[in-house]
Image 1: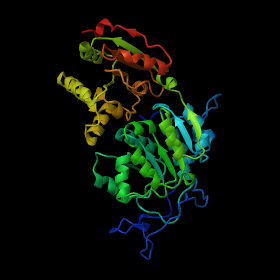
Image 2: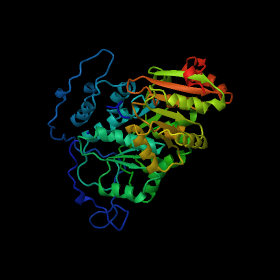
Image 3: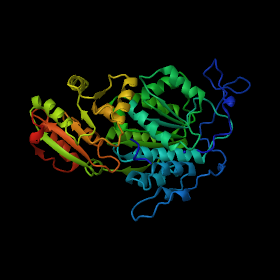
Image 4: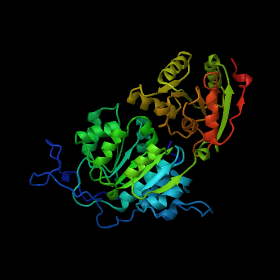
Length: 451
């Protein structure tokens, strides 16, 4: 979960009674009933500091360590530092140390980083500190977002929002999510009844809300595009283009653009949506191999399932994620595991969102020991205590291997990754090794796991 991460402060002077939304209209109106017009610029009111909170950074003493950046060193607002102290995080991860000095000063950024590097905390810290340093004064509207984070999957959106809530807990900042597969009316009520400081959304559902004028993006101050390469692969870019056009021009907003890979197509998008960005690159091998013990077992396709069940019964396997390449493969595997008495859950695009959330909660609590997932669904899993990951089938895209095994070995803990290589997919190994920059030694499974 968020434990790689590490909020407000005062609310704006406006109460909800000041929200000037005409209940029978989706337009913004002034007192005389005319549509309210805003200049297409970032709103930056007077730099009025909020009253000092009771908590003081002196209560969170962190010694200086050569080569490490303390959060103390970044000049963060006290409520944000308070949340970081509560989480017990003292030093920045590499991507945080490299990006925050730039993003905290308002610069756009291109970040090449996998999940598990602390990138979520990097952009959330920049967002929250900016919103706290620049509280809005005067008129505000329901549904009008200050910071917008777009991510490709429902699971990732939910996880980012959970992380954000941990960081804003000492503030009055609000965090809202918009995802498909959940009740539209309930989400609509959420953005109507509270101000929208941080909005985290998938492209399709966000576009629905924007088209219906339930949210307004013309005053977005900070835009984050997370996992841009995955959004490109999933065909979301036309929707994202429409969304970006609803926000202020790039010179009037701050844009943070993250991608695990930067192909020519991804770079073209980054060039269109950012202005003079700084670049931060965290190589995947530094993420994938440091804390994960990797094994590749040579097996026949017919032996895979029995090998998996024998592995799941080992006493050192506390929690296990099993990755497959296709929805139907994952569905059949999950059905077999349940049939044979295992506490197993399924995460894939064909599972309803409320069921997926319930499954993730069960996995986090330990009620579910085995989680079967597709690559897209698996990207949203951020849980620190996963002991093992199994690649039931080798991924067809090498980058997916890094994402898969990155589900274990998190927050400085050790993890184990086991890949089943058979006659159908062993040919994929050289590309994985090329990406990792190391040889993956193939071995026979231990006798204790053999059928």
